[in-house]
Length: 134
Image 1 (cartoon, rainbow, N blue to C red):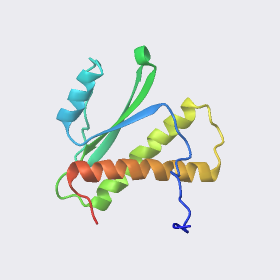
Image 2 (tube, helix red, strand yellow):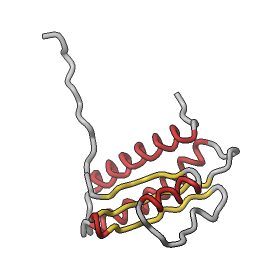
Image 3 (cartoon, rainbow, N blue to C red):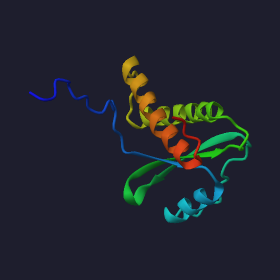
């Protein structure tokens, strides 16, 4: 037998119908609203060095969408940006639980769910802003 190690599978605890997007500038956000055919005049993120999550329900396609909008200056550190991501993903997590009518999620379910959301959003942010660390 060649490989003596076990293979671990993805640790995702919860898969939902929530589509989660990340924008790092207003142009990306406006382009996505156009693509989704959302005609409302929605502010991107008014706060410098802040973030906002917008939630949309696309009834025609039966989709729940969360778009995280980051408005971070170049002087912000990676850790400050990641702290904003944690803040926003908690809003997404609460939305998902409410959508699933999950009133008492287990502690491990929440921990792994939040961890998975953070890894996905932080990785996307780091790649989009070239702030990735090795």
